[in-house]
Amino acid sequence: MNIKLDEGFLFGLGAFETVAVYDGCPIFLERHLERLARGLEFLGISRRVTEEEVYRCLRGQSLPSSGVLKIVVSERNTLFLPRENPYKTEDYEKGFTVDFARIRRNETSRFVFHKTLNYGECISERREAAARGLNEAVFLNCRGEICEGTASNIFFVRNGQIVTPDISSGLLPGVMRGHLLERYDIREERLHGAEISRFDECFLTNSLMGVMPVLKFGSRLFETRETADRLGEDYQREYCLPGQA
Image (cartoon, rainbow, N blue to C red):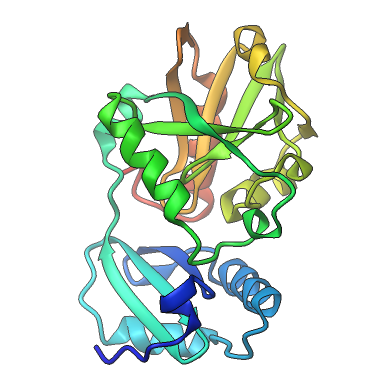
């Protein structure tokens, strides 16, 4: 792999996408490439990635049936990095345990709305969460509003209504998040950290995990996962996926 030194690798001025690949088929590829293009435009980078490039790359790879293709673009580089999907069946069966991150998300930063190589904060907090025995950490912003996880968007259910943090709270508009917003009655609201006890259910999403039920958020134990299971099953059925794995 020949990597050319540029501002992407010196200062994080690059963008990336992680695409779920099932049996050689990239899920939500058009959405991913559109978001990648927006991120590159934000960074002032003229390089673009086409669907043809992605499929050409996949034809040359030997991915597992449930795999991932990471696309990384900077001013002088375009990388396609295949790997296995880290989420397993037992993760969905058990559900995730999460809590708030130790640091706050800066909702005034334009970078939080794009998937850029400025990702060190998320990685650091995710490692800290693992050290605390958690599966994920969720950021509050400087106003005390719930934003997103280090690698996921978050949803809650309150009296049968699905709600998720508004983008203005400071979060990356995830591809799976967008998919759910288009198909279900979901309200985008400013949600405060103190509200956790008022919710009946919680789940996380991203392009690799799909829909992940949350078993426990801090000290709050969620006794139901009906909505998460229903949405996850709908997603599997719509895209002919083999199941949450």
